[in-house]
Length: 113
Image (tube, rainbow, N blue to C red; front, top):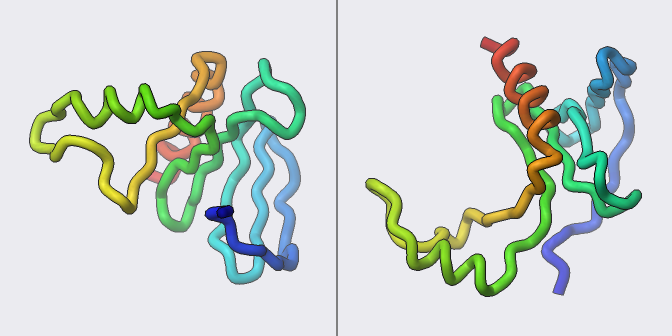
């Protein structure tokens, strides 16, 4: 069973590429600013990071965690946090090679104030 719904969109504007960033405004979808993909993965499989300027969030695509990682997460307490991951949240794995792109995303978010 797929967790993705079909998506139909129309490009409203394209702000161009500046410093490796692409900003798209899609009809009916919050604008996401593409930051980068993992340079060490094959095409179509890359972890990716975007900045959502309207919601003021970082958006990540990464690898799904395996059962072993989920068991570890469920067993490790965090201060002021229930054990495990709530149903409305999800853990993803990102390789260290994504750190430069994550830094770019943080810098872009900082620019929003």
